[in-house]
Image 1 (tube, rainbow, N blue to C red):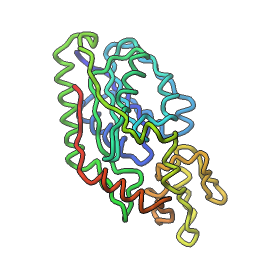
Image 2 (cartoon, one colour):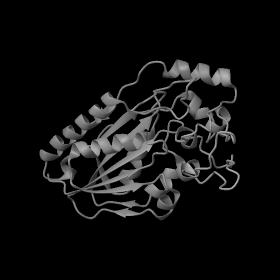
Image 3 (tube, helix red, strand yellow):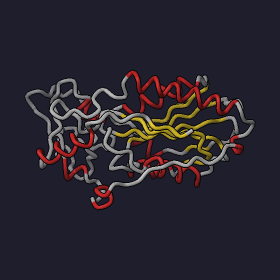
Image 4 (tube, rainbow, N blue to C red):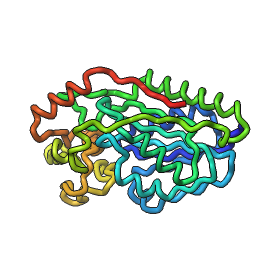
Length: 273
């Protein structure tokens, strides 16, 4: 089966999911590509995508928040429409737990008319990772990106063996919620992490934090963060060239103990093909 066009759809505040999606796209080697970055609020608000040709392929990448798909990504993804085209699903988690994000994605896209060709759980640097609490620092690393490209080559081989996407058997994607994820309320990141306040003595008013915030939580004048809508993705802290924002925790000793324990062992890529 020949694929003529690839649509890349992802949400990636700290760029880890984007890196994986782009590595897979490069490995697929499809020249005609479209990139849709749902990290931007206006893109999410206006997003709709209808695939009509059988020779089109879709790849969707999301980070794992609290073991699930981020809520603010579900609504735009519900505006997908397919006619039995193939889709590759990617979930990127911070070396703690992959949860049920891939299962949620699979259920969503199948209801929208797509067939899941392949799926993968990859690892990216945890949003809470900083100089004092290193969790999957620097990931996806060279080995992760190499595996992403190899994954893409295996997908190409799989597609070349068929004439129609509908010939492919259904994938059995696994995943489960740990007890903590079941009992904690939504947006529980706010329970564990403080909003990243700006250190005025370091800030040079470059405005990068405002631009990279996926929910527009930062006031343009005073640079204060709206606690109600802040995701705790920490894109503002990680991308600040002056290091004027820091990642700080509530119940710091407990948070660090739990994350160090759960994130100590290097997790590896898991693929479904």
